[in-house]
Image (cartoon, rainbow, N blue to C red; front, side, top):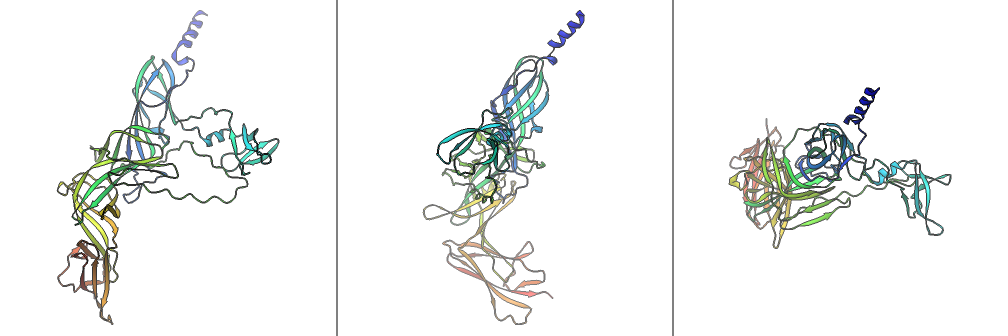
Amino acid sequence: MRWRRALLLCALLSPGAAAAQAPITSPAPDAVAVTLYRASGRDAETPIDRDRPQGFALVTETRTLVLPAGRSVVRFEGVAGNIFPETALVAGLPAGVREKNLDADLLSPRSLYDRALGRRVMIRRTDAKTGRVVVEQATIRSSGEGAVVIERGGGFEALGCTGLNEAILYPEVPPGLSAKPTLSIELDSPAATTATVTLTYLAGGFDWQADYLLQLSPDGTSASLNAWATLASSDVTAFAGSAALVAGRVNREDSDAESPSGDELELACWPVGAPPPPPPPPPPVMLAAPPMAARMKSEEASDVIVVASTPVAIREQLADLNLYRVPGAVTVAPQAQKQVGLLAPAQVALNAVYRMRTNGYVAGTSDLVLRWTNNRASGLGVPLPAGRVVLFGNGASRPVLLGEGHVADKAVGEKVEIEAGTQPGVRTDIVPLGDPGISRSRRFRLTVTNATAAPIRYEAEFILDPQQRFGGAGARLPVRDGRPLWQTRVPAGGSVSLDYVLAERR
């Protein structure tokens, strides 16, 4: 008998049979670093989706834990709400992780209501007859998918349909709800210790893009360039620490993270009438030319923050990708956008050309196109991440907007071409010359008029049918990409013409 009692005592004292210990909570990281990756399916012409950014982030957190001996549960509060829990790695623990869990049921109006289904709550309402505020007991009988149906005094009624103030008062916070997204792990520690651990994971709901501000010189031969990076987050967690951006396409399958249940509670009266009209679209990202600074708040409480005089990011090579490390501390705010400096200001030598594409019969629009080679000779010679371009010109007293375009990822040595849109000061007309009759060839005159105050470079690109033949333009025109190309210079306030013939091939 004694040896059985001794075995039982040893079993009770062993770590595996110890009584369950209270969870160890890490309320926030000591330090955090966030690396943002662009949405893989979004091209340079498409802006960031403000409501649902489709990129992702690599989050690295450093935390200090006081661990007891034996088995314990550690709760990491304040992780990303859109975390991919299967990607979480914990380094620095005295022993391996036995289990990982994501506690994504956040404390919110909706989760409170759903947890109160079938339970007694207090209803605070204004009496329609006396105008007095009264509080009475009721039981919630409907889920959060439509109208609020409550049972009171043996009958059922819909809440919030009287036009008077009505509210639900909950007696307590239901168990299992967390005010922050929480990742919990279960581990075994051979001895009590204080450990500094590193938690690394991927999270969805992030994105970034480059935004270029170009101010064109009056003669169209150069432009001053400023480059900013717009950071976007739809997550509920703020990350204050170091930030980095990865330019390039990362091979990763899209998978939407399970959003935490921190949604608003939107309930209708019963019976439900016609649905309300959709909200207006959010305003676009505000771009400000340095040294201006602005802050804008949208109807969805999404902030766009433009920071003036921000140090530029430091570029590093990451295999075939480019990593831009933002100097200093950066706060990636929840459900917000902000801008940080990306590239140092530069003066870029370029060619500004007004281009018109036509089938030879009808004139097209005259679009301003900026061209340069991305090398040191042009004033750059650094990789250019994909993004949007805003082009300014010199007005009488301040810069004026000339157009917007976009640029794809450009490596050093590549040619850059940016279409900045139609310019009203340059007009092209095509008129037939003579009676066409039954001839297989027709003569036309193309006239370009420059109403601006400076001479311009102009080119007309003829996109012809395979059965057509182009000729009669005096000197033989050069061909680019198989298309006849007329290049000329138009003086300020002047015009230039080209006569040509379009003939059917026999």
